[in-house]
Amino acid sequence: MEPSRRSAEHDSAVRETASDASLCKLSASQLGYYADPFVQFFVKSPSRRMPIINRGYYARVAAVESLVRKFLASEDDGGAPQSKKQVVILGAGLDTMFFRLKNQELLVNCEYFELDFPDVTMQKVSTIKRRKPLNGLLGLSDTKNFMTAVSSGYTELNVPGYHLLPCDLRDLEAVSAKLETVRIDRTVPTLFVSECVLIYMEAKFSTQLVAWSASYFDDVSFSLYEQILPDDAFGHAQIARFTEHNYEVAQCWDMNKIYYHYLDPTERVKRERLEIFDELEEFHLLQAHYCVVVASKLASTSAARALALGEVKA
Image (tube, rainbow, N blue to C red):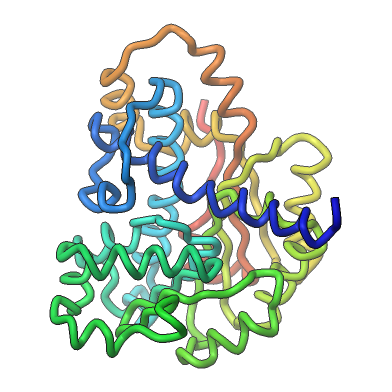
């Protein structure tokens, strides 16, 4: 197979993960693992997933959203809320976290950016246009206003506080140019969020992305949910990728550690009662293949302190 064709097929497979993730998140949401009234709009044919998958997606969503919430709530060194923050979702797919946070009024003084392939962002733009609960949160219920916010051949959507941008994360020059057109601020606290994205990129591209982020932003942090083992060579390399490219601090916990020592234990126990199953060994094995990585360019910032995973309590 020709390299160009092989690359195109790889990219297509990566895009399909967006729909699968939404399907799994909808399954978990419908069973009460977490509240998401918006994910239903991005799934054409809902289907119930196995309990082990539902619980795993609860852990994934809870961990990622907890980190974002803590970043948003972080204060400056004087104890006052910071005037502005930015959240950048890499390979955002059909994720609905923006709408959940917006609906809870947690994105005040925050610019939220979602980056993905053009065909994925086009699908998301189309869905937002058709669904009033989505376009209403953006102040775009009026068709004329919506069309004013859309650009780049129906693949881009920009309103104050939200920017859905088409781009290939392997082309950092184009990514920089796109972000600059929507006036991203290099000087304010910025959090990059990635869910199973860097794992699908060649190592050279993901490493370049990390290095670029540290050189581009003054106060930047990363929150990753990835398919890696923290204690194997690749897990250590993932941490080193940050610490060797101007990130002063990086932590990596596997999802078992996150599940039992980071997530709210009261909320966790409630979810465990939703679907009783005996495959705990299988669940633990599955969770051990995923991890959360947090990293901050500056260890002394409020964002770095807010994102710290902490120590395991006995």
